[in-house]
Structures are given as structure tokens and as C-alpha cells.
View 1: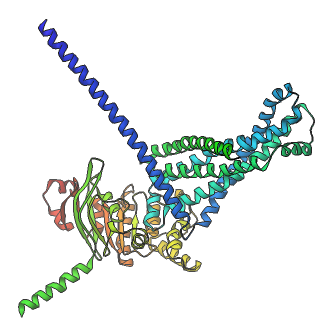
View 2: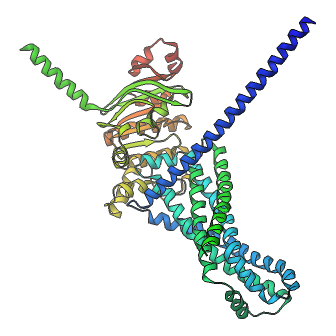
Length: 281
Length: 260
């Protein structure tokens, strides 16, 4: 009995010790996670500060900037055109029954135009670009980091932030609004096709009805936020590539993290932009 | 009088010795988390010499030369590079000092999205901005000739063999006429014949460009061809220092494990 009791005490002690160890491990885990998160935020802030500093420094890499504009803009265009057309088509087909219930089928072009320009065009284009451009930047810079190409650049007295990051971030910032314009334009085309599946509307009348519903205040905030989306994709993609660890596994992780984080930030920026637009306009 | 003459001679010889030191490292320390890689390293690189840093994998050899060019920031100690404290300089001053150093990376680190020509002109057009196109082309041809390669200008790095990549990487390192060359395991991953060729090339670069070099390696064939002086790193400390003959004659088990 006594022996059992001792064993019991030991067991209780063991459980208590295990629990306290688990609790302290959990606390350490949480502390470590908090530290990692804060370190990441700090590193990202310093990274953005360096980008801003190098953007306004002398010896801007114009040739590389143009090459990146071509890579980001031209090479993403087919994907954006296809997606934009399908977006417009699907939106029109899906909205038609609801509009028909209220006898407002004639307002379909205007409704689709406002939806495309204010929200769907920018956000879908940004999310597609986060996948295509952001992952590309993360993987390319991550692979350059792993194979010491970024170190080689630094040692040969060339600033890698200026050459690799500033050019990519600026190109993404400038190209995304242009891609969004293409997505919107082809979204209109898709919508016109959608309207004509069950109706008969000329392209001129469609455009007249669509643009009749859009004001400058629909267009302007939407374009402004696409610059921010572009900057987010560029900064996050480059940051994740630049901070990739060692080994090929980290290249995949950098590409994945670039897509996940930039997609999340795009949605957060969109939410803030919508709130600001709602307050001011 | 004799004493004063001796003192002045000593001073002259001291000054000469000081002038000849291109790199002076004192009590260098570097850790990664809890892992102390370099514990207390002090060394000097003299003008015109090939200093080989020998040691097992993970002994901190690469970390040492990355600290010299500030790719890594040391935790303690000082590095005097060409008369400047590397730890205290930054920005333009750091760039200027890096222009005088050639660094051959273990992997070659050629920019894989660029052709050989673009790789070679990359540092040149950014550092020496006033060069004309013909001068750039002449310089590229000169360095290619010096590393024993031609007709590869328009090739991509992926189309080159390991030895060729090392040669192009070496050509890119010497294109700015460096004063000091740092070689990070220059013969790793190459067959014995190509390894010997690269080692001979290191000597030929030293003669042609009058460089002083630190060569990080664990390849004894490379050590035998290139070393003027050898330093052996072990567990974050300098374990031994001497000439090739002294190392080969040593009966220390650790040194013998490298040289047998």
C-alpha cells in the first residue's frame, strides 16, 4: 500500500512535471513564434526601407527595369486576357437570372462594368499575378541566394537590392494597373458575349450602357489600389526570395510563402482601400 | 650608436612588414545561434603570397573569408583589409574596398540568366562606367584568354562543364584587376585533372595580376600546387601554421590525416 502510494506520488509528480514541462515548452513555443513574427515584421520593414532608399539613389538600373516590365507585363498578358474574358462572361451569365427577376436585364452591362472595374478586375488580376509573378520572384531570387549569386553580386560591389529588387518592385507596381486595364477590357468583351447568348445587343450599345454606369470615382480608387497590389506582390516576392534559407527545399518554400503572404496582404490592402474609398467618396 | 642604428633598422623592417600586410585579422569570432564557428582567429596575409586555409568541412573556412568581405558580420575581433577596418565601414567605402577583391565562390555563382559575356561585363560596366564598348570587349577577351577559354561568350552557364564554369567565374573575379583574391574551395567537385588545371591557373593569376590570395580548401593536391604558407583550422581555432614542407614533415595525427 505504502509502496503503491509512493509510486502514486511519483506518478503525480511525473505528470505534474510533464505538464509543467509541456506548459513551459508551449510558452517557449509561443514566445519563439512571437519573436519570429516580430523579427519577420522588423526585417520586412528594413527591407522596404532599403528599397525606398535605393529607388531614389543614383545609377538606376533602367535596362533591367525594362526587362522586368517585359517579363511581368507581356508574359502575364495572355493569362490575364483569358481570365478577364471568362470573368466577364461568367459574371454576366450568373447575374442574368437575378436581374431578369426584377426586369432589369438592360442594366446588366452597367452592373457588370461596375463590378469589374471596382472590385473583380483588380482583385482577380492581383491574385493571379501573386501566383504567377510573386512565386516567380520568390523562386528566382531564392535560387540565386542558394547558389550564392546574390553574394557574388554584392562582392563585385553591385548593390543587389538596387539591381534585383528595386527593378522588380517598380516593374510590378507599374505593370499591374496596366494588366488590370486589360482584364477589365476583356471582361467587358466576355460580358458582351454573355449578354448576346440570350439576347441581341450590339457592341456599341453594350459599351454605351456599360460606360454610362461608370463614373470617375468608380475608376480612380480602383486603379490606385492596383498600384498598391503590384507593390505588395513585388516586395513580398523579393523579400521571400532574398531571405530564403540554404538548400533547394528553401527555394520551394520561398516561392510558396511569397504566394501565400502576398495573396493575404492583397486582400487586407483591398479591405482597407474599400473602407477608405467608402469614407471619402 | 649601434643600438640606435639597430632600432632604426628594426623600425624600417617593421614598417616594411606592416606595409606588406594586406589583411590582418585579430581575435575573430563568429557564431550561428549557439554554434561557435570561429572562436579566436588571428592571421595575416602578406603581399604576393598564397595563403592556404586548410580544415575539415564545417571548420569555418568559408565563414572566415565571408567575414573578410563582410558578407557575414563578425561577432567579435577586427579585420583590417588594405588599411581599413572592415567592420566599421559601409556604403560607398565598403563598395570601393570590395572592388579590389576578387572572390571565387565554391559553386562558381555565375548569373544563370545571363550569357558568359553578360556575366563578365556585369561588374565591369557597373564599376568602370567610363569604359567604351571596345575597351570592355578587349578586357573580356583578355581575361578569357588568361583563363584559357575562348568561343564561349554567347553560351549560357548551364551549357558549360564544371571546370569551364570555374574558369569563367575566375575570369569574372579578375576582370576588375583585384589586389586580393579569395578562393572558396576552388577545386571542389572537379576531376583530378581539372582540379590541377584550376590550381595551376590560381598560380598563373597570381603572377599575371600580382595578386595575393587566400585559398580555402581541403584538397591536398591544390595545397601542394598553390601554397606559400598554410593555416589549419580546427574547432574554430588555428590549429597549425607553417609551410608545406613543415606540414608534410609533421607527425601530428590530425595533420597527418590530411597529408598522408
